Image (cartoon, rainbow, N blue to C red; front, top):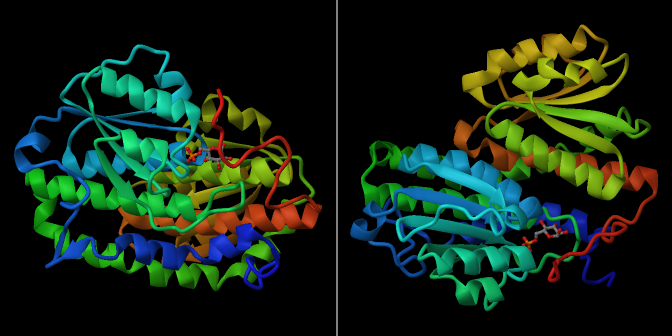
Length: 368
Ligand code: G6P
């Protein structure tokens, strides 16, 4: 096992560090002549793509959080309305599905019972099902109409990291490929988007280079039993994933909130010294985030901010700040999640828990 960990103390840390490679491998061979080419794996044509009038994301756990990012990504790129559900809700809620629905199931293992059941429900109602999975030959991949494989390699740690970022990459590729088929307005800037997408492996490495700083950050959260994550837009989706990561391995209770919702209840829980991890990577809502941060600061919160390089305005309002390299807002989730994965990892180590095998949890939930 020590050899398999390749010099890292835990599989989770190894897998966090494998993300630049997982992203590179998931992109490999799928960009040709300045365009996304998924023609080998996705059977959609310009004609059949134009028949799709809604998209449903269905998944569980971390894969569901990838879908939350996917909702924004696919809506922005395709202008088709997107819904998202956890699989255990979707399968029992009699969703409105027909042959004009594209159902995207996201599953690292491809064996999650609820996700598989949701896939079957979708197929029964005539939907086209596209699977994003990390396991070639898995049940989900065998039953779906189209499969985009994430080339993250085997993920051993229960807490998913490199599978999540690879799922995001698959979603970006899908969104751009569909945009090309549908000839939406983003096609005009596809070259620029692809440059940004392809800069992710290197920029992820830059974020990993700040691991020591994140380990340092961890000290201000590790003795707390409750904390909050805040974000707007896709930062909110990333906040949910950061919060899940922290809960599942460090057992610190945390809640992720859409920052604009604070004043509708959660603000009552903000008191002196409580850590609030505030994501502010989305430029369209940056000013709004800064004012949310000021709201919690005014009530004594200890704020750890995450922003893009150059957005130094955040420094004025937070206690500690970490920067991710500048990137198009659409792709920021890939970079923003990495510090949160590391934060959860260091918090778990500091508290002395089992990183790779958290209590009560399984890597793949194949029974209901
Ligand atoms: C379990 C794992 C999670 C994972 C979820 C969905 O709960 O512990 O890490 O996100 O299942 O798994 P899947 O294989 O469908 O992505």
